[in-house]
Amino acid sequence: MIVVAALGDSIVAGSPYWDPDPVVQARIGGALDPESQWEHWAARADPRLAFRNHGVYGERTDEIARRFDTAATGADVLVVQGGINDIAQGRDVQRAADNLRALVRRGQALGLPVAVANVLPWNGGWPRTEEPIRRLNALVAELAVAEGVPVLPFHETLESDEQPGRMRPEWTSDGDHPSVAGYRRLGELAFELPR
Image (tube, rainbow, N blue to C red; front, side, top):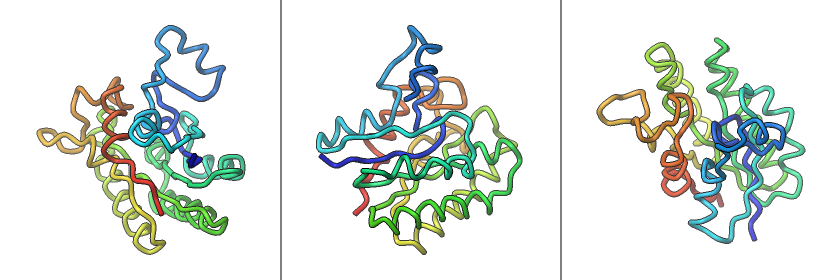
């Protein structure tokens, strides 16, 4: 088995129908669905993968960074994701990119293969957030090249051709998070095991 630690916000957690925290699971109740995680679909596509979901709803990149040690311990691979909550809270996208770069470097310092996911389109924040999302994603692409890690193309995988800057309606559950169909696309089409 290859243990993949996925560290990030609600997109890693699987919101709105999944969360790794049992307290949040109890609140979700009857709507709880483990297929509402990209990790579920990536593991189905490659049975060697054992994902550890370290996603926390609403966290910014600086908050995600505080959980690095817990997530990375015992992992064979690290996936870093985050940034939309920085944008939602009006934080500087350069600082968010710097935080993601620091997480990538911390993973590499442990000898882990690392991948970084870019930020999804955000229907609920469009059009106000489209420009900062594109700016942050450009910075994520730059840091990935500089650090020699792959970018998981979450944005491109769920962006609508007909409505740029937004997810297609069938790929989002609430305008903020993917639907099960959206998570399936991320797990099957956007996930690449870093080497």
